[in-house]
Amino acid sequence: MNPPTFEYFAPTGIDEVIDILAKYPGEAKILAGGQSILPLLKSRISSIPYLVSLSEIKGMSYVVEGKDGVKIGSMTIDSDLENSDLIEKRFPILHDATKQLADPLVRNVGTIGGNLSHADPANDLPAVMISLGARFTIRGKKGSREVEARDFFMDTFTTALEPDEILTEVYIPFWGRNSGGAYVKFKKNTWNFSVAAVAVQLELDGNTCKKAQIATTAVSPKSGRVESAEKHLVGKPLTDDVIKKAAEEVAASAEPVTDSYGSEEYKREILKRITREAIKKAISRAGGN
Ligand SMILES: Cc1cc2nc3c(=O)[nH]c(=O)nc-3n(C[C@H](O)[C@H](O)[C@H](O)COP(=O)(O)OP(=O)(O)OC[C@H]3O[C@@H](n4cnc5c(N)ncnc54)[C@H](O)[C@@H]3O)c2cc1C
Image (tube, rainbow, N blue to C red; front, side):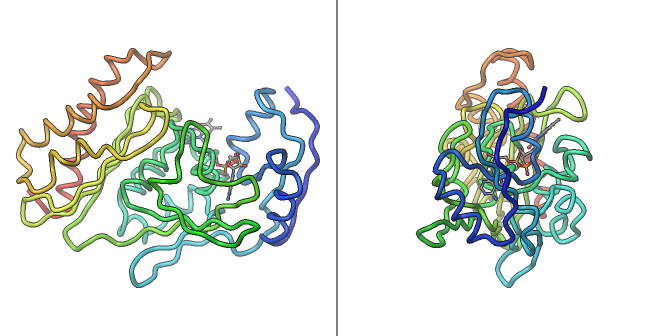
């Protein structure tokens, strides 16, 4: 199906993007890789009168290592993250997610900024960013501001972005020396969204858990921290029993719904299994036993 008609803008600067968004509040939307917004338009689920493409703006795609973390431009495509040695070495949890995200065709055009701004609870990158404690730089008419990943996702398809704002950069801080993370995704075929997925990032002191941040994908209206499960890990030696209890808490506190991917009960069982797997993988990557 063809999309409803829209006016198309291709500005060459971020200020111009903000001006157009502010001129048509709520009616103008950013077009990044188009992998979420175009299917919505083509299926006529949405009608957007003004589309503002970011494709002509230079310098929005980069992965740069700093002293305390890594900066990622919001137009960086998923496959650039997947193929980045820096990301694989520093944030294997993000490498896990990008290599399983959709298929190579989608990854070659879909952007990190679009994946996060779309705020689909089934998208993989929100949970990863929340577990890593990432911060997002947002620009709008009132200037620039930073938002923690955990505060960015407000509800299904709803973020902290105001109508005139654009997400320009993602910053992921380095964790301590004995840290590691893993993203485990359960899906029914190679190209699809998750039935359920979990992101676990840990810091260890010996075999004791010093810090833990856990977030889920596709089992709640929005991705968010599962602090009740993190509490089962922090300050404790990571025995099988401790890991099992944390995994049970992740499953219990989720809000999965029965759909074509499976029943609510089935998804809770999957969550228990993949959370145990993710915690064990994170421990191993953090240098624990
Ligand atoms: C077949 C298929 C399978 C998929 N499977 C998965 C999957 O398994 N896992 C997964 O995570 N995703 C999956 N996706 C979604 C995909 O990752 C999209 O690329 C992503 O959700 C949106 O990124 P985009 O750059 O294409 O954004 P667009 O589609 O261009 O934009 C999406 C939304 O974000 C807004 N936006 C975009 N960039 C910005 C910005 N910088 N600032 C503010 N707002 C912005 C747009 O206005 C729009 O509302 C799949 C998509 C398809 C078509």
